[in-house]
Image 1 (cartoon, rainbow, N blue to C red):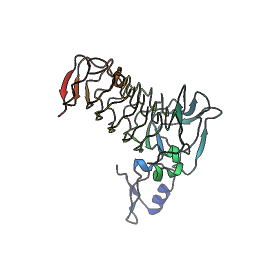
Image 2: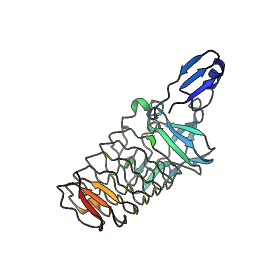
Image 3: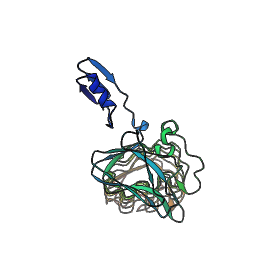
Image 4: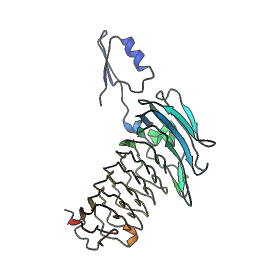
Amino acid sequence: MDYLKLFQTHSEYEGFVSGDTMVKPNVSHCIQENEVHYNHIPKPDEQYLTFEILSGGTLTWSKYNGTSYARTIYYSTDNGNQWNEMNNYSSNVSINVNAGDKLIFKGNNNCYGAYSDYEYFSRFGGTSRFNIYGNIMSLIYGDNFYEKQYEYPEDIGLYKGLFFGLFSNANVISAKNLILPLLELHGDHDYGWMFIGCSLLIEPPKLPATTLADNCYRQMFDSCTAMATAPELPATTLTECCYEGMFYGCTSLTTAPELPATTLVSSCYGSMFSGCTSLTSITCLATNIPGTSCTYAWMRGVAASGTFTKAADMAGWSTGANGIPTGWTVQDAS
């Protein structure tokens, strides 16, 4: 959106754009000198991870299950002129924020969580409500995030996830302009649990990855009860548990994202829409379902009636919670 601003003099303009305001006009007119100035407005993928505070309170940086995945990150309230450390190793960090504040974040860590016998991760939280936007990779590559945003970090290790649990149970409202730029995922649980329990989340981020890893989106939006629209899922080759429980308990979700993959694998859709009580429409183009675990309980507790769109040459669907819900209308994809 264009931001136009009038200034009486050039000096007034210089004072404004060199100040601490987070949002600069991209077109400015100085009336006395009859000057027009243009300022580049960064696109979302050019911006650091940004929190737009909607209600006053606290913003916290905490660790879950010990210090194994405690991390140091940095935030700025003045558009990067000064950076402040947040280190949750010895104790969780809490800062006070006010409605209208904007905070940008960066870090130099190759991942923020792991899932093996137990869950370990660092996460944002607190009492304030906020929107998030900008490039998530500023938490991985710091100031170099834009140039390296499509590079998967090296040496992430087994069972680790880039952003596992990062916003779990936080009061985030919109993440529609949060940029998750990676097209290839390689770690267990990269986005697993990322927004689990975010009951206020209305707008999720886009998910452009087409190369998936095991568990990569597992329970990503579990219990996001306010989310009525799901992001598109473009991958056509699936991995074990890649979408397991992804939308579990999303009670406002009415239409599932189209599922274009033709061959399913173990637990790829397990419990994916379980508990989605408002769900009435799904398109699944699978033609090869090698076992019941692929779709185990994926439709448990959905609406009593709805429309299931399947591949025209697929005749092997079962009926019930593990297949096409009982009572639903079945039609072939055109």
